Image (cartoon, rainbow, N blue to C red; front, side, top):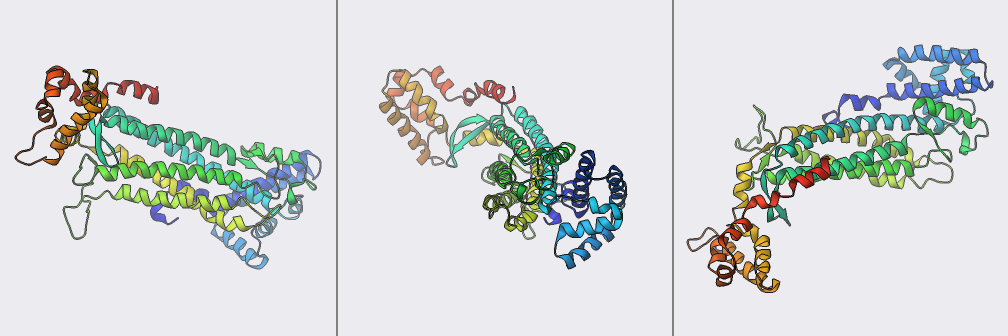
Length: 443
Protein backbone atom coordinates (compact mmCIF):
# COMPACT_ATOMS: atom_id res chain seq x y z
CA UNK A 1 0.00 0.00 0.00
CA UNK A 2 1.15 3.56 -0.59
CA UNK A 3 2.49 5.26 2.57
CA UNK A 4 -0.40 7.78 2.53
CA UNK A 5 -2.81 5.02 3.58
CA UNK A 6 -0.46 2.96 5.75
CA UNK A 7 0.36 2.85 9.44
CA UNK A 8 3.83 1.70 10.55
CA UNK A 9 2.78 -1.06 12.97
CA UNK A 10 0.74 -2.91 10.36
CA UNK A 11 3.21 -2.25 7.57
CA UNK A 12 6.01 -3.78 9.66
CA UNK A 13 4.21 -7.14 9.66
CA UNK A 14 4.69 -7.37 5.89
CA UNK A 15 8.30 -6.21 5.86
CA UNK A 16 11.08 -8.56 4.64
CA UNK A 17 12.60 -8.45 8.12
CA UNK A 18 9.48 -9.82 9.80
CA UNK A 19 8.92 -12.38 7.05
CA UNK A 20 12.45 -13.76 7.29
CA UNK A 21 12.32 -13.85 11.08
CA UNK A 22 9.18 -15.97 10.88
CA UNK A 23 10.76 -18.20 8.25
CA UNK A 24 13.71 -18.79 10.53
CA UNK A 25 11.48 -19.45 13.52
CA UNK A 26 9.58 -22.11 11.57
CA UNK A 27 12.80 -23.80 10.48
CA UNK A 28 14.34 -23.61 13.96
CA UNK A 29 11.24 -25.03 15.63
CA UNK A 30 11.14 -27.86 13.11
CA UNK A 31 14.78 -28.65 13.92
CA UNK A 32 14.00 -28.68 17.64
CA UNK A 33 11.12 -31.08 17.04
CA UNK A 34 13.33 -33.33 14.91
CA UNK A 35 15.98 -33.31 17.64
CA UNK A 36 13.39 -34.29 20.26
CA UNK A 37 12.51 -37.25 18.06
CA UNK A 38 16.17 -38.18 17.71
CA UNK A 39 16.18 -37.59 13.95
CA UNK A 40 18.90 -34.92 14.08
CA UNK A 41 21.56 -34.25 16.74
CA UNK A 42 20.37 -32.07 19.64
CA UNK A 43 23.58 -30.10 19.43
CA UNK A 44 22.89 -29.30 15.79
CA UNK A 45 19.45 -27.93 16.69
CA UNK A 46 21.04 -25.78 19.41
CA UNK A 47 23.64 -24.40 17.00
CA UNK A 48 20.97 -23.63 14.43
CA UNK A 49 18.92 -21.82 17.04
CA UNK A 50 21.83 -19.89 18.58
CA UNK A 51 23.53 -18.79 15.39
CA UNK A 52 20.25 -18.20 13.61
CA UNK A 53 18.91 -16.04 16.44
CA UNK A 54 22.10 -13.99 16.37
CA UNK A 55 21.86 -13.57 12.60
CA UNK A 56 18.23 -12.49 12.80
CA UNK A 57 18.98 -10.06 15.65
CA UNK A 58 21.61 -8.41 13.46
CA UNK A 59 19.49 -8.66 10.32
CA UNK A 60 19.89 -5.57 8.13
CA UNK A 61 19.28 -4.24 4.65
CA UNK A 62 22.55 -5.87 3.64
CA UNK A 63 21.10 -9.28 4.51
CA UNK A 64 17.97 -8.56 2.49
CA UNK A 65 20.21 -7.58 -0.42
CA UNK A 66 22.21 -10.80 -0.06
CA UNK A 67 19.06 -12.93 -0.12
CA UNK A 68 17.84 -11.01 -3.16
CA UNK A 69 21.20 -11.62 -4.82
CA UNK A 70 20.93 -15.36 -4.27
CA UNK A 71 17.32 -15.41 -5.45
CA UNK A 72 18.33 -13.63 -8.65
CA UNK A 73 20.40 -16.73 -9.43
CA UNK A 74 18.24 -19.51 -7.95
CA UNK A 75 14.87 -18.02 -8.94
CA UNK A 76 13.50 -19.45 -5.68
CA UNK A 77 12.86 -17.32 -2.60
CA UNK A 78 12.92 -20.06 0.04
CA UNK A 79 16.11 -21.62 -1.33
CA UNK A 80 17.69 -18.16 -1.37
CA UNK A 81 16.84 -17.70 2.31
CA UNK A 82 18.09 -21.19 3.23
CA UNK A 83 21.37 -20.50 1.41
CA UNK A 84 21.79 -17.24 3.30
CA UNK A 85 20.99 -19.05 6.56
CA UNK A 86 23.58 -21.71 5.77
CA UNK A 87 26.20 -18.98 5.39
CA UNK A 88 25.37 -17.83 8.92
CA UNK A 89 24.94 -21.21 10.63
CA UNK A 90 27.68 -23.28 9.03
CA UNK A 91 27.81 -27.11 8.67
CA UNK A 92 24.83 -27.74 10.95
CA UNK A 93 22.62 -26.04 8.38
CA UNK A 94 22.43 -29.38 6.53
CA UNK A 95 19.73 -30.35 9.04
CA UNK A 96 17.57 -27.31 8.25
CA UNK A 97 14.40 -27.88 6.17
CA UNK A 98 14.69 -31.67 6.46
CA UNK A 99 11.59 -33.39 5.05
CA UNK A 100 9.93 -30.02 4.38
CA UNK A 101 8.77 -28.28 1.24
CA UNK A 102 8.67 -24.57 0.50
CA UNK A 103 4.95 -24.26 1.11
CA UNK A 104 5.43 -25.51 4.66
CA UNK A 105 7.42 -22.35 5.33
CA UNK A 106 5.47 -19.96 3.11
CA UNK A 107 1.96 -20.94 4.20
CA UNK A 108 2.79 -21.21 7.88
CA UNK A 109 4.53 -17.83 7.73
CA UNK A 110 1.51 -16.30 6.01
CA UNK A 111 -0.70 -17.70 8.77
CA UNK A 112 1.49 -16.01 11.40
CA UNK A 113 1.46 -12.71 9.51
CA UNK A 114 -2.30 -12.78 9.04
CA UNK A 115 -2.89 -13.52 12.73
CA UNK A 116 -0.53 -10.71 13.70
CA UNK A 117 -2.40 -8.40 11.35
CA UNK A 118 -5.78 -9.55 12.63
CA UNK A 119 -4.78 -8.85 16.24
CA UNK A 120 -4.14 -5.24 15.23
CA UNK A 121 -7.45 -5.08 13.35
CA UNK A 122 -9.27 -6.38 16.43
CA UNK A 123 -7.70 -3.60 18.48
CA UNK A 124 -8.80 -1.13 15.81
CA UNK A 125 -12.34 -2.47 16.04
CA UNK A 126 -12.36 -2.04 19.81
CA UNK A 127 -11.35 1.62 19.49
CA UNK A 128 -14.07 2.21 16.89
CA UNK A 129 -16.70 0.44 19.00
CA UNK A 130 -15.75 2.57 22.01
CA UNK A 131 -16.13 5.76 19.95
CA UNK A 132 -19.51 4.70 18.56
CA UNK A 133 -20.78 3.67 22.00
CA UNK A 134 -19.77 6.98 23.53
CA UNK A 135 -21.39 9.06 20.78
CA UNK A 136 -24.53 6.89 20.75
CA UNK A 137 -25.10 7.46 24.47
CA UNK A 138 -24.27 11.14 24.07
CA UNK A 139 -27.11 11.50 21.54
CA UNK A 140 -29.48 8.92 22.92
CA UNK A 141 -32.23 11.54 23.24
CA UNK A 142 -31.26 13.75 20.31
CA UNK A 143 -34.20 13.82 17.90
CA UNK A 144 -33.37 13.52 14.21
CA UNK A 145 -35.28 12.53 11.13
CA UNK A 146 -35.17 8.96 9.92
CA UNK A 147 -35.08 8.60 6.16
CA UNK A 148 -36.14 5.91 3.74
CA UNK A 149 -35.32 6.21 0.04
CA UNK A 150 -33.51 9.41 1.02
CA UNK A 151 -36.88 10.96 1.93
CA UNK A 152 -38.02 12.08 5.38
CA UNK A 153 -39.79 9.17 7.07
CA UNK A 154 -40.31 9.52 10.85
CA UNK A 155 -38.37 11.03 13.76
CA UNK A 156 -35.88 8.85 15.61
CA UNK A 157 -32.99 9.09 18.04
CA UNK A 158 -29.66 10.05 16.50
CA UNK A 159 -28.09 7.91 19.19
CA UNK A 160 -30.11 4.95 17.92
CA UNK A 161 -28.72 5.57 14.44
CA UNK A 162 -25.18 5.40 15.82
CA UNK A 163 -26.09 2.41 18.00
CA UNK A 164 -27.12 0.56 14.85
CA UNK A 165 -23.66 1.07 13.41
CA UNK A 166 -22.17 -0.04 16.73
CA UNK A 167 -24.17 -3.27 16.54
CA UNK A 168 -22.97 -3.89 13.00
CA UNK A 169 -19.33 -3.40 13.92
CA UNK A 170 -19.80 -5.64 16.97
CA UNK A 171 -20.99 -8.35 14.57
CA UNK A 172 -18.05 -7.59 12.33
CA UNK A 173 -15.67 -7.98 15.23
CA UNK A 174 -17.03 -11.47 15.84
CA UNK A 175 -16.65 -12.24 12.15
CA UNK A 176 -13.03 -11.13 12.38
CA UNK A 177 -12.43 -13.39 15.39
CA UNK A 178 -13.81 -16.34 13.42
CA UNK A 179 -11.67 -15.37 10.42
CA UNK A 180 -8.58 -15.28 12.65
CA UNK A 181 -9.32 -18.74 13.96
CA UNK A 182 -9.81 -20.02 10.42
CA UNK A 183 -6.53 -18.60 9.16
CA UNK A 184 -4.33 -19.45 12.19
CA UNK A 185 -3.21 -22.74 10.65
CA UNK A 186 0.17 -24.45 10.37
CA UNK A 187 1.19 -26.98 7.72
CA UNK A 188 4.49 -28.84 8.01
CA UNK A 189 3.59 -31.92 5.98
CA UNK A 190 6.11 -32.06 3.16
CA UNK A 191 5.57 -32.57 -0.54
CA UNK A 192 1.86 -33.05 -1.44
CA UNK A 193 1.00 -33.19 2.27
CA UNK A 194 1.69 -36.88 2.93
CA UNK A 195 4.22 -36.56 5.80
CA UNK A 196 6.36 -39.06 3.88
CA UNK A 197 9.56 -37.36 4.99
CA UNK A 198 8.54 -35.68 8.23
CA UNK A 199 6.36 -36.69 11.17
CA UNK A 200 3.04 -34.99 12.00
CA UNK A 201 4.55 -34.55 15.48
CA UNK A 202 6.92 -31.95 14.02
CA UNK A 203 3.96 -30.03 12.62
CA UNK A 204 2.17 -30.17 15.97
CA UNK A 205 5.28 -28.89 17.76
CA UNK A 206 5.75 -25.99 15.36
CA UNK A 207 2.05 -25.13 15.44
CA UNK A 208 1.92 -25.08 19.24
CA UNK A 209 4.92 -22.77 19.56
CA UNK A 210 3.59 -20.38 16.92
CA UNK A 211 0.11 -20.21 18.46
CA UNK A 212 -1.45 -22.00 15.49
CA UNK A 213 -3.38 -25.20 14.86
CA UNK A 214 -2.22 -27.97 12.55
CA UNK A 215 -4.05 -28.26 9.25
CA UNK A 216 -6.29 -31.35 9.31
CA UNK A 217 -5.67 -32.23 5.65
CA UNK A 218 -3.19 -30.18 3.67
CA UNK A 219 -2.29 -30.85 0.07
CA UNK A 220 1.03 -29.21 -0.56
CA UNK A 221 -0.56 -25.99 0.62
CA UNK A 222 -3.05 -24.92 3.25
CA UNK A 223 -6.43 -25.03 1.46
CA UNK A 224 -7.33 -21.57 0.21
CA UNK A 225 -10.95 -21.65 1.30
CA UNK A 226 -9.55 -20.46 4.64
CA UNK A 227 -7.99 -17.39 3.05
CA UNK A 228 -11.11 -16.75 1.00
CA UNK A 229 -13.22 -16.73 4.17
CA UNK A 230 -10.74 -14.33 5.75
CA UNK A 231 -11.00 -11.84 2.90
CA UNK A 232 -14.76 -12.17 2.78
CA UNK A 233 -14.79 -11.04 6.41
CA UNK A 234 -12.60 -8.06 5.52
CA UNK A 235 -14.95 -7.23 2.67
CA UNK A 236 -17.99 -7.23 4.94
CA UNK A 237 -16.19 -4.97 7.42
CA UNK A 238 -15.29 -2.62 4.56
CA UNK A 239 -18.96 -2.44 3.59
CA UNK A 240 -19.81 -1.47 7.17
CA UNK A 241 -17.22 1.28 6.99
CA UNK A 242 -18.71 2.59 3.77
CA UNK A 243 -22.25 2.49 5.15
CA UNK A 244 -21.27 4.74 8.07
CA UNK A 245 -19.12 6.96 5.85
CA UNK A 246 -22.01 7.37 3.42
CA UNK A 247 -24.30 8.41 6.29
CA UNK A 248 -21.85 11.11 7.34
CA UNK A 249 -21.45 12.31 3.75
CA UNK A 250 -25.20 12.78 3.47
CA UNK A 251 -25.58 14.47 6.86
CA UNK A 252 -22.85 16.98 5.93
CA UNK A 253 -24.57 18.09 2.71
CA UNK A 254 -25.24 21.84 2.79
CA UNK A 255 -29.01 21.43 2.57
CA UNK A 256 -28.97 18.86 5.41
CA UNK A 257 -26.14 20.01 7.72
CA UNK A 258 -27.09 17.81 10.65
CA UNK A 259 -23.53 16.65 11.32
CA UNK A 260 -20.12 17.14 9.80
CA UNK A 261 -16.54 16.03 10.03
CA UNK A 262 -14.38 18.10 12.36
CA UNK A 263 -12.79 20.99 10.46
CA UNK A 264 -9.29 21.64 11.77
CA UNK A 265 -7.78 25.08 12.28
CA UNK A 266 -5.93 25.97 9.11
CA UNK A 267 -7.71 23.29 7.07
CA UNK A 268 -8.69 24.27 3.52
CA UNK A 269 -11.64 22.76 1.68
CA UNK A 270 -11.02 23.99 -1.84
CA UNK A 271 -8.28 25.70 -3.81
CA UNK A 272 -10.89 27.85 -5.55
CA UNK A 273 -13.73 28.26 -3.02
CA UNK A 274 -12.63 29.36 0.46
CA UNK A 275 -16.03 28.62 2.01
CA UNK A 276 -15.90 24.87 1.34
CA UNK A 277 -16.01 22.31 4.19
CA UNK A 278 -15.95 18.96 2.42
CA UNK A 279 -16.51 15.45 3.86
CA UNK A 280 -13.04 14.38 2.74
CA UNK A 281 -12.52 11.69 5.40
CA UNK A 282 -15.75 9.86 4.71
CA UNK A 283 -15.21 10.15 0.95
CA UNK A 284 -11.74 8.72 1.43
CA UNK A 285 -13.17 5.86 3.47
CA UNK A 286 -15.66 5.10 0.71
CA UNK A 287 -12.80 4.71 -1.74
CA UNK A 288 -10.72 2.56 0.61
CA UNK A 289 -13.73 0.30 1.21
CA UNK A 290 -13.95 -0.30 -2.53
CA UNK A 291 -10.31 -1.35 -2.55
CA UNK A 292 -10.72 -3.81 0.31
CA UNK A 293 -13.79 -5.41 -1.28
CA UNK A 294 -11.91 -5.75 -4.55
CA UNK A 295 -9.58 -8.25 -2.86
CA UNK A 296 -12.44 -10.65 -2.12
CA UNK A 297 -12.89 -11.93 -5.67
CA UNK A 298 -9.24 -12.92 -6.28
CA UNK A 299 -9.20 -14.59 -2.85
CA UNK A 300 -12.22 -16.66 -3.87
CA UNK A 301 -10.60 -17.51 -7.21
CA UNK A 302 -7.49 -18.72 -5.36
CA UNK A 303 -9.44 -21.64 -3.89
CA UNK A 304 -9.36 -23.70 -7.10
CA UNK A 305 -5.70 -24.67 -7.44
CA UNK A 306 -4.49 -27.48 -9.71
CA UNK A 307 -4.32 -30.83 -7.92
CA UNK A 308 -2.17 -30.65 -4.79
CA UNK A 309 -0.59 -27.33 -5.64
CA UNK A 310 0.14 -24.61 -8.13
CA UNK A 311 1.33 -21.05 -7.53
CA UNK A 312 -1.41 -19.09 -9.26
CA UNK A 313 -2.47 -17.94 -5.79
CA UNK A 314 0.99 -16.73 -4.82
CA UNK A 315 1.21 -13.51 -6.81
CA UNK A 316 -2.33 -12.64 -5.73
CA UNK A 317 -1.60 -13.09 -2.03
CA UNK A 318 1.66 -11.16 -2.20
CA UNK A 319 -0.55 -8.19 -3.08
CA UNK A 320 -3.87 -8.64 -1.33
CA UNK A 321 -2.61 -9.84 2.05
CA UNK A 322 -0.48 -6.80 2.84
CA UNK A 323 -2.68 -4.33 0.99
CA UNK A 324 -5.95 -5.66 2.42
CA UNK A 325 -4.85 -5.61 6.05
CA UNK A 326 -2.88 -2.36 5.78
CA UNK A 327 -5.80 -0.59 4.10
CA UNK A 328 -8.37 -1.87 6.59
CA UNK A 329 -6.14 -0.90 9.52
CA UNK A 330 -5.86 2.62 8.17
CA UNK A 331 -9.57 2.85 7.38
CA UNK A 332 -10.68 1.69 10.83
CA UNK A 333 -8.33 4.15 12.52
CA UNK A 334 -9.56 6.98 10.29
CA UNK A 335 -13.19 6.10 10.94
CA UNK A 336 -12.61 6.01 14.70
CA UNK A 337 -11.05 9.47 14.68
CA UNK A 338 -13.82 10.81 12.47
CA UNK A 339 -16.55 9.55 14.78
CA UNK A 340 -14.80 10.71 17.94
CA UNK A 341 -14.66 14.27 16.56
CA UNK A 342 -17.91 14.26 14.57
CA UNK A 343 -19.67 17.61 15.01
CA UNK A 344 -23.41 17.16 15.59
CA UNK A 345 -26.07 19.85 15.23
CA UNK A 346 -29.16 18.85 17.28
CA UNK A 347 -31.00 22.12 16.58
CA UNK A 348 -30.62 21.64 12.84
CA UNK A 349 -31.80 18.06 13.20
CA UNK A 350 -34.95 19.22 14.98
CA UNK A 351 -35.48 21.95 12.38
CA UNK A 352 -35.26 19.36 9.63
CA UNK A 353 -37.78 17.15 11.44
CA UNK A 354 -40.34 19.95 11.23
CA UNK A 355 -39.18 21.37 7.89
CA UNK A 356 -42.03 19.68 5.98
CA UNK A 357 -44.75 21.20 8.10
CA UNK A 358 -45.21 18.16 10.33
CA UNK A 359 -46.07 15.55 7.68
CA UNK A 360 -43.46 13.19 9.15
CA UNK A 361 -46.01 12.43 11.88
CA UNK A 362 -48.52 11.02 9.39
CA UNK A 363 -48.00 7.43 10.54
CA UNK A 364 -49.07 8.11 14.11
CA UNK A 365 -52.04 10.21 12.98
CA UNK A 366 -53.14 7.31 10.79
CA UNK A 367 -53.18 5.07 13.89
CA UNK A 368 -55.04 7.71 15.90
CA UNK A 369 -57.85 7.86 13.31
CA UNK A 370 -58.05 4.08 13.16
CA UNK A 371 -58.37 3.94 16.95
CA UNK A 372 -61.12 6.56 16.68
CA UNK A 373 -63.22 4.16 14.62
CA UNK A 374 -62.36 5.19 11.08
CA UNK A 375 -61.49 2.35 8.70
CA UNK A 376 -57.81 2.13 7.85
CA UNK A 377 -58.51 2.80 4.18
CA UNK A 378 -60.50 5.95 4.95
CA UNK A 379 -58.01 7.06 7.58
CA UNK A 380 -55.18 6.67 5.08
CA UNK A 381 -57.01 8.83 2.53
CA UNK A 382 -57.72 11.54 5.10
CA UNK A 383 -54.14 11.67 6.36
CA UNK A 384 -52.58 11.49 2.90
CA UNK A 385 -54.85 14.28 1.69
CA UNK A 386 -53.77 16.55 4.54
CA UNK A 387 -50.11 15.59 4.04
CA UNK A 388 -50.15 16.28 0.30
CA UNK A 389 -51.93 19.58 0.84
CA UNK A 390 -49.14 20.52 3.25
CA UNK A 391 -46.34 19.21 1.03
CA UNK A 392 -47.39 20.79 -2.25
CA UNK A 393 -48.04 24.23 -0.79
CA UNK A 394 -45.08 24.29 1.57
CA UNK A 395 -43.55 27.77 1.74
CA UNK A 396 -46.32 29.42 -0.24
CA UNK A 397 -48.68 32.15 1.11
CA UNK A 398 -51.62 29.73 1.10
CA UNK A 399 -49.63 26.93 2.70
CA UNK A 400 -50.73 25.46 6.04
CA UNK A 401 -49.08 23.05 8.45
CA UNK A 402 -50.02 19.42 8.57
CA UNK A 403 -51.84 20.00 11.85
CA UNK A 404 -53.82 22.89 10.42
CA UNK A 405 -54.88 20.82 7.45
CA UNK A 406 -55.88 17.95 9.73
CA UNK A 407 -57.92 20.19 12.01
CA UNK A 408 -59.68 21.66 8.97
CA UNK A 409 -60.96 18.20 8.09
CA UNK A 410 -64.34 17.52 9.80
CA UNK A 411 -63.59 13.79 10.11
CA UNK A 412 -60.54 14.61 12.24
CA UNK A 413 -62.06 17.53 14.17
CA UNK A 414 -65.07 15.49 15.19
CA UNK A 415 -63.21 12.41 16.38
CA UNK A 416 -59.78 13.44 17.68
CA UNK A 417 -59.22 15.54 20.78
CA UNK A 418 -56.53 18.21 20.85
CA UNK A 419 -54.48 16.37 23.49
CA UNK A 420 -54.49 13.19 21.41
CA UNK A 421 -53.32 15.14 18.36
CA UNK A 422 -50.65 16.84 20.48
CA UNK A 423 -49.27 13.45 21.43
CA UNK A 424 -49.42 12.15 17.85
CA UNK A 425 -47.42 15.13 16.61
CA UNK A 426 -44.81 15.01 19.40
CA UNK A 427 -41.36 13.91 18.11
CA UNK A 428 -40.48 12.60 21.58
CA UNK A 429 -42.92 9.70 21.20
CA UNK A 430 -40.45 8.17 18.74
CA UNK A 431 -37.86 7.87 21.50
CA UNK A 432 -40.05 5.91 23.89
CA UNK A 433 -38.38 2.58 23.16
CA UNK A 434 -34.85 3.91 22.97
CA UNK A 435 -33.90 2.53 26.41
CA UNK A 436 -34.98 -0.95 25.37
CA UNK A 437 -33.10 -0.68 22.08
CA UNK A 438 -29.94 0.43 23.88
CA UNK A 439 -30.31 -2.37 26.42
CA UNK A 440 -30.39 -4.92 23.59
CA UNK A 441 -27.28 -3.47 22.00
CA UNK A 442 -25.15 -2.45 24.95
CA UNK A 443 -26.54 -4.66 27.71
